[in-house]
Amino acid sequence: MNTLSKPKILVARAIFPDTLELLESLFDVHSNQADRILSPAELQEALSSVSGALVAGSERIDQQALSRAKNLKVVANISVGYNNFDVAAISAAGVMATNTPDVLTDTTADFGFALLMSTARRITESEHWVREGKWDKWSIVNNPLGMDLHHSTLGIIGMGRIGQGIAKRALGFGMKVVYHNRNRLSKEDELACGATYLNKEELLREADHVVLVLPYTPENHHAIGVNEIALMKPTATLVNIARGGIVDDNALAQALQSGKIFAAGLDVFEGEPVVNPELLKCRNIVIAPHIASATEKTRRAMVALAIENLRAALTGQKPPSLINPEVWGKN
Ligand code: DGY
Image 1 (cartoon, helix red, strand yellow):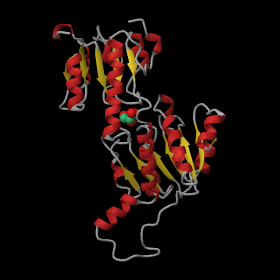
Image 2 (tube, rainbow, N blue to C red):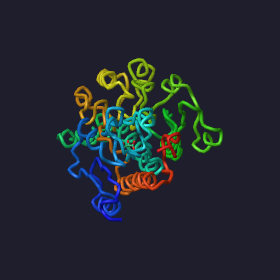
Image 3 (cartoon, rainbow, N blue to C red):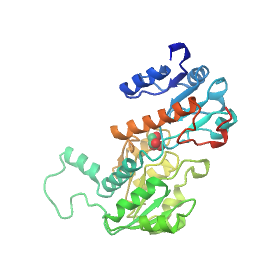
């Protein structure tokens, strides 16, 4: 393939240098190794001249972004969540949309469990306490006392692959697992994760720990707000590894400050990377910068799957994780 015949692609965010080299051997690549997030106008301009694009959650792909994308065949998200895609607009433009499921399930479930443990056992708060010189003695009552995970009830809202992975980990801790999901799991899957279906309100009332792993959709905006938090136990923890916007961050900050719930662990935020200053004031919170899938092995696997999706789409094959199959064969 000479350079002139190579399809032109956009790589909208920085990727591993060796992977970029591989891409450059196959495509005419317009890359962004500086990792500066493109403005909507820059994204629209960049998409106007390419056949394929590797993007991430920072790139909103909607009618406006696609308005000049006359040759675009595929937008490949390097992410399993695709709330940055307006799928209807992408399909209307005859463009294939893909994501990266499966390859990050275990890494993300591990992290969900780690965040849950840190939150319930006050690990980051304890570290600050030690660093601030407050640890002057071992004490039965005056050291940071946490909440147990073992033999408590874990409530998982959003029981897809990652939610099920967290449930399986919880079994090893002797936890009772209850879940809520748009669709109830098959009996077989419920048995495999030892999980019992509850409606959302029942789950919030019963759970000692609540983990959110549901997709962000307009219906799930502020799925956890003042009313939902009011149902939770004052001793409960809330962990969000799904998306900002699912939790009303103002309501959560107030609940943490007034002791309505015990603690929260957050990997995602409304308007991230900016974090609500009221949340930053709370001591009973563990904060992470959207890193649930962030191990090098998994991030490489996500990029590799996104590239495979893009390569397939540009060589007339069906991408392995096509989100909008109705477009397949039509462009
Ligand atoms: C995902 O894959 O959805 C992760 O949250 C990264 O965006």
